[in-house]
Length: 247
Image 1 (cartoon, rainbow, N blue to C red):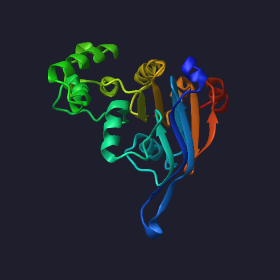
Image 2: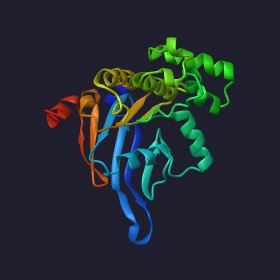
Image 3: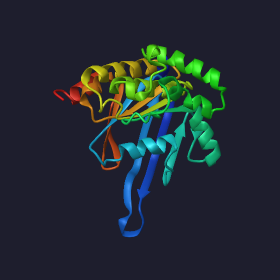
Image 4: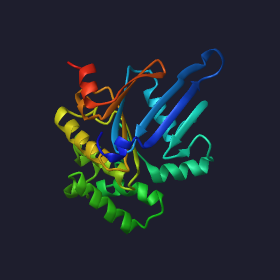
């Protein structure tokens, strides 16, 4: 495991027997089927499986952006399936950062202004938020691009701005949906090295949904989904390499 916390198995995230349905009547679909999933402090966990198997739904339930229809969802010992919507919004704003396949940057804002948005949502003063945003851009190698708008940045640079935005409020859980699929190999590797470093922090956890087999080697553990369930967990990089040899 990556560090003592992970070795002790301290859980950041735990889902037990979670169900999720979409639609009504004849069109009702059982998307998550009594699904179990967990992630520990100080590790990078990948969630893989065919399209439509429920990976993104699982992430959304985990992040509290979708409600579970049954089961338990615990994040940092908070049962997010049992708190009020306003408590959940506050919990998410403090504890969770999001990175998406589409970078979702605001085109009219500079890189630094984009990164500062989560701090402004928390009520931080503009000057303080921008100062912190520029410091985080330095850590992802883009300090020199702080005043550029997204249209001036490459895809790889935009994704690094998106990572800086996800990290600026120092969330303990980073949730990533296909963070490298729009990137070439070199930029994908750069982004994964950043995420790998983030996951090494003892109080941090990174969960990545991906179809990109090029990045499997960065995972500490891998949960494989099929038909709405996690059917197998690979508990070490060696197990992952063996199971996905030749991918």
